[in-house]
Image (cartoon, rainbow, N blue to C red; front, side, top):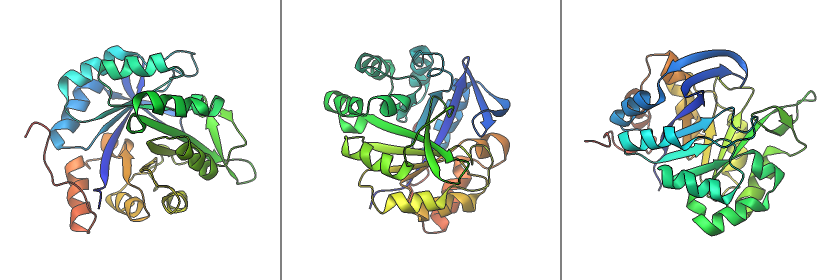
Length: 258
């Protein structure tokens, strides 16, 4: 059985680590991404995710220099996203030190781009990131462009389509729960985990150790954590210890430098 993963998620704006609520509200600065990544690496996290939150809206790709600096300092897999629309950009990010590339709006605009990317770089390098929220009728819908562009796509059906197009992993982010620390979208996790054959990464909602356990028990292959690590005294070590004690199959505690 594959071990469940704990993944800190970094939101980058102007080279700094930031955190908002519901993608756009109440921005708080949270430090230097390189030094923070080194701390998490020493705690033995399984991976790190970096997302340039302005890249898509500004019509550019995430900058590779910060990825190069992080890759020089940490030794865990890095997933990088933000404004990725071409195969050349994916290649550049992989050469900068990324192990996987996260694709969001381009998967909406040109779904076959996922197939082309997976064919060239391998399914394992391609993560499709799906942001979703409830519309005015309570129906969950996929949003692009950093949560600003609504679509008619149902997130479950869209995730299944991305799997069929050879996405190696699916990252599901609930905009409504982002930064709220009130628990993951367990219904979405359960709905997808029964139907996906590729790993499902659940994002948005971690506020307690129990939230983490419940998301993994619901079927997530991995969880991302941001606000809980930044604004509480919970660390990756505490999360891993709690999960292991409660029967969740996680990797034993060991930093990459150990």
